[in-house]
Structures are given as C-alpha cells and as structure tokens.
Length: 340
Image: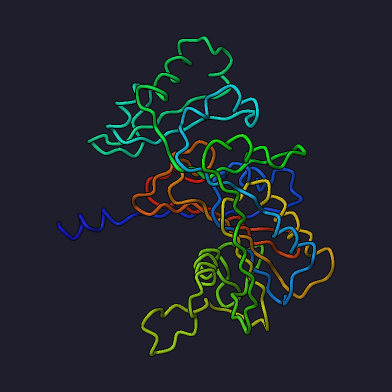
C-alpha cells in the first residue's frame, strides 16, 4: 500500500501530438502560438545548416525587449490610464493562497486542482468591463482591495506588443518605479556529426525499422536542448540515453536558443520564417521550433489554470517538414488541463 501511495504522488505528465499542413485552412498553428502567452524559452534546430541567414539572424536578435519592474503595486493594472494605454482586451488573473485570498476580500473560486483542503484560489478580473464605469461598486471594491485592504506588490516581468511608433512607452509609463529594459539572451551553436531520428511526416506512430514515433522524437529533442551526451558509453553514469532508431547522422546542425520573456507575435514570425526555409531546395528533411513556458505562470494556454508545485511544464514543439506538413506536440505537467 505504501508503494502504491508513493506511485500516486508521482507527478503525471500529458503529451498531445497531432499532424497537419500549414496550407490547410483548418490548421491550428497560429491559435496555439497566440494563446500561449508566457513564453520563457524558444529553441530551433536546423539540420544540415552551418550558419543562419542574415534575415533569420536579425529576426532572432529582435525578439525583445521586455521589462523588469520591482515592487510594482497591483492596483496599477486597474487604472484607466494603464488600460487605455496598453490593453485592448484582457483579464487580470490572480493565483492566491488561502490567507491572501481572504485578506483581499475579493470574490474568486477554489483552484480546480485543490484537494479536500482548499489552499489556493483564483480571482479573475475582466479589465475592460471593470473600467467601463469607474464609479461602479465593483470597481470601487477592487480598487479598495488593492489600495487599502491588501495592497499587494510584486516584482513583474512585462512585455508589450507595440504596434505604434513609441518604443519607450513602457519605460516612461513606469518611470516612478524601478524599471529595467532587458533583452533576451541568445545562444547560437553548431552541432557536429549529430545523430538524428528518421521521421516520416505522415506517420506520427512511426513504422518499425523505417521511421521513429513522435514520442521518441520529443524525448530526443529534450536531450538535445539540454545538451545531454547521447553516446551511451558504458562508463557514462549521468545518462544512458541514446538516439532512437532508425537514425541518420548529419554533418552539422544549427541550434539557436532564445531565453527571456518572448511574445507570441515574435514566435509567429519565427515560425513563418522557418516555414519559408524550404522555398529554396535544402538538404534538411525537417526543422523544429520548440517553446517552453514559465513554470510559475498562472495559466498555460488561454485562461487554463496552470500549477507548478509538482513540475510546472507547459510547452509545445513544431516539427516542420519540407513538404509543409507539420507535427505539433503539446505537453503539460501536474495540475494542468489537457492542452487545447
């Protein structure tokens, strides 16, 4: 019984795989990217490539900026000035422990992943509805809660997709607080003699002795992005993992990793550019784009509640084939809904 109890406590993980084509009018690739808001790391791998084109390199270097604001009061996000400047539509979502939730005096709901003893609550505030009438009882109550009842302050990472010409609006708006502009960190490397799984775009489940499964690919990519040694040598006590079979060796592959707070709009541009990689003949049968979310973000996709105390994973990967077919893999950990 004790063993069974321990097994139940092991965090579960969920992986969803699907295939489509970028030319299909029902393709969900844009929706998946645009509703995954909190992106921490973006990586792409291009086999048979030794150097990036200038256009792609420029795109990589333009994935910022984002901003770090220290001790920012929560009430700043419900002011009419903030919403009219930065928000077209949006919801403020608070994930609060039981004591903090009760101290705010706001109405929320228990976490959907609470056990018998509810220790976590979710408060959702529609910002557009809230500021339609600044004299309403609802606005007065929320404002009173954030300013007087429980004046919460946090360190925030902020990113804004600015479609106008004023690049410094965020810096000037929060100038009375400690604000820093930051740029994502970019790591570029060339992998030599890389053993890669053989894939067939039409076969998610693979074919014995012909092609690998999507699940095997997902594990292999995790090892590549984590710089795991895949030699499987007998004296290697850190990792015995090796490339799934069948496999092939590519002379070189280009790996790019971008780390920071990266907006969905920037990721859409990267994916679009990688899709056009095959406009001219290439040796690479596929390229891949992987996106990892912040472990402690309040949501994963859309408004889906996200938990992080038992893992925090929420990520997706596009495997882009030279015929414009693609595989989409979406993964979450414990305390998460099934990906969309």
